[in-house]
Length: 116
Image (cartoon, rainbow, N blue to C red; front, side, top):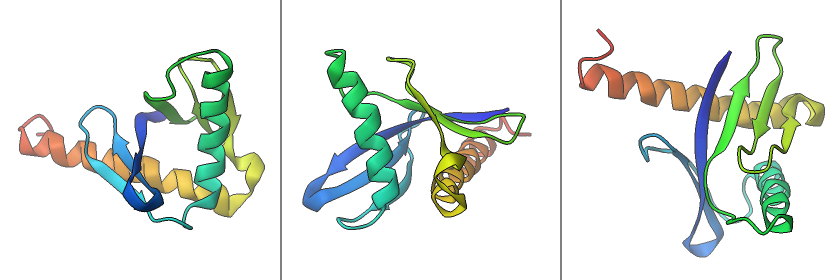
């Protein structure tokens, strides 16, 4: 299994910034009008938090399971979605975030000497 925790932050002018929760490294930035699938998934996750009267901020967990399923889940609510159910292109948007998160973690580890 491969996984990471991500923060999705609203930025000026309708942007969404995706950060690696552990380090705050920016993995992606979506301008207004971009990332419609990602925005839809986030709306669903945040709605589940609001229904439970929880803070809408905080990290979400993205995991590639051993069976190949890519799942985004909310540790606060237990709500999860198997992203392949939405089609290959939509799944790819989140798979790319997972790849970027792992690349960022490898770079950070090598810079601190922990990746040697």
